[in-house]
Image (tube, rainbow, N blue to C red; front, side, top):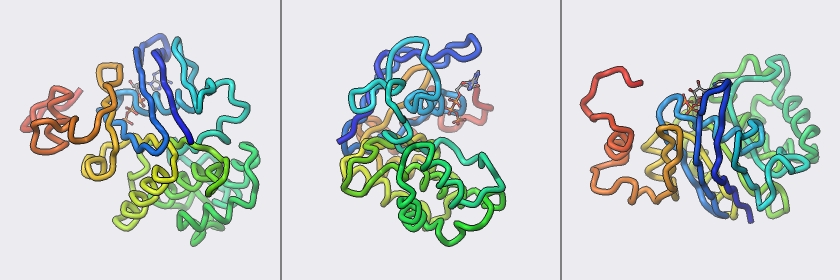
Length: 248
Ligand SMILES: Nc1ncnc2c1ncn2[C@@H]1O[C@H](COP(=O)(O)OP(=O)(O)OP(=O)(O)O)[C@@H](O)[C@H]1O
């Protein structure tokens, strides 16, 4: 069973407050989506949860342990934080070998995650030649490395905009994968702008706005009296649905 707890988190970068007073708990078996406009702080929050950003104050606990005290966060957390290839000349297989070794995950997992994500079809080609959707699938494969089927691997997973660039069958595949991970007891946290997908899949929604996070609420509660999630979201961030102003 896995749990992500964020307590009273404050993040400052280059002397600017990016997030403050963030409290969030992703429980075992829950799929939580983070919403928020460009620059709201979703990636910053996910990176903080993964221990890649040191908070000015507050804490992140993964299964009750402060993330920065975990001996190997990449073993305790499945992470997909972006699609930029670190080494464009590497193949997917070599990339995964490198990540698995760094995280202390057995190399026998590599073939499993390649097959589970469909990356095995092009696992021996250099990442620099991948399309966006192919890079997304590789990022998802990386996040699955420490997640052992029925074992004691990572319990919690975070994904930063994993849907971007996936084709239609990829979106359906990822929806089923995230649902299956949650059903297996993993706490799953996903940042996305794709509200149709959020509406059909999320257990709860958190809105990142005005440098903080709303309480996590079920989709129906977030939607309230609005016709759909998009209208509710626009109202929540203070934008009129018919507005043609450049947001900012
Ligand atoms: N290293 C950094 N130094 C200073 N400011 C930063 C740094 N990284 C991010 N920021 C700022 O933090 C804010 C939040 O950025 P973040 O990438 O977390 O937003 P986001 O919600 O993920 O946006 P998007 O939806 O566009 O991906 C932005 O104002 C960004 O400019």
